[in-house]
Length: 295
Image (cartoon, rainbow, N blue to C red; front, side, top):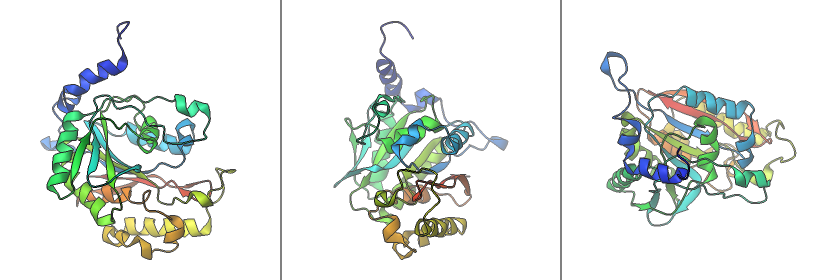
């Protein structure tokens, strides 16, 4: 890069050209000229400290990223951003990072991840969501929270693929979040990877912070197994009745880390295969179960 040129100025120029200009005309044709469909991905992002890890979980995310080709952009719904009235969509050419965690080692606040944004795609996402009955608006100020950048630093470490984040509606229902995924599902055929970032089990009051490798608590393992069974059976509608699951209120005292799974399931295609990305627990109660939908 020429001396004196700020990287974010470069990214702003790149992103302003639009996603098509950044990544080319679209995903490469597959066999017999068919277009490759981008996956949809759900990640349980766990503690922000996973950003510094190099164990089996980040390695699994890296393997997933290495196995994905011809992705034009990433559209992510994270547990850590909820907006009232209208769903906000990041629309900055060079979105900053949001360090939305407190009391962590200073090294965490020095971590960088600088993908370009996708303002033109943000406009498209806003239009598609609004047309589906989910009022949405472009947001030119908000950056990417750790539910986005922590897993993406492992999956796509080179930060070349444009990223935008979509907020959860405040007090959303599973059906509302699934509708968001359904509205954006056609983007997968244009090479846009749709991602939900949350947690299959997330109760910070029950976390064993002293032991990352602690065995899963029985109540957490039971809820996680219920989710795994529903996914294996493709019972996506049954997953919407999650409050009827064993230990649901303990697994999720609040719903924000659970809801992003419906964004991914709403984006499912009939021909999708559900493929595991990672299975296991951190700190005894954080299920790190992550999976992809691949056509």
